[in-house]
Image (cartoon, rainbow, N blue to C red):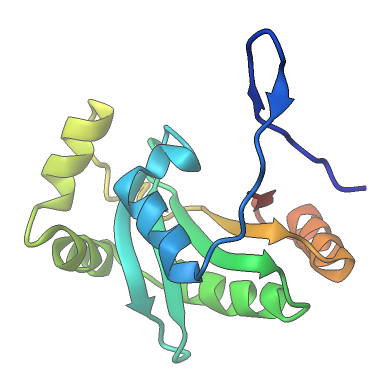
Length: 168
C-alpha cells in the first residue's frame, strides 16, 4: 500500500500545498543537483548522467559517509515496470567501479576536484579506499511507483542489497 505524504501551509486556515507536475526529468535532476538534501542530508553527489558499460546513463551518483555508493534513478511520473531491470543493470555497473574510477567520475562532475579532499571536507573523515563502494543503495525517485516496481524493489531488497524507492 502506497504511503502518501502532504506538505501543509500552516496558519489560521491550514491547507495542503498543491502538488505540481514537473515538466521534465531534467527539471527534477537539476533541483536535486542544486540541493541534494531534497533526498538526503547524508549524501554527497559525485556524478551526474554517467554512462554505464551497459550503454545506459545513471541520473545521479552519490556517496554516503560510510563510503557506500548511492545510485539515484529519476522518473518524473509513475515508474514503468522496466525500472527495476534498469536499476539492476546500473547496480551491476556500480558494483564494478574501482576507487580510481569513482575518483575520475567525481573529478568530471566537480570540475577537477579531488574526491578524497571533498569527502574529508563533507564528512570530516578520510575516505578509506578499502571501504569505498563495498556496498551500494539504489534509490528510485518517482511521482508514483506502480505495483510491479514496488514488488520488484521489495524482492531485491530482501535478497541482495539495500534498495529504496521514494515518491516525490
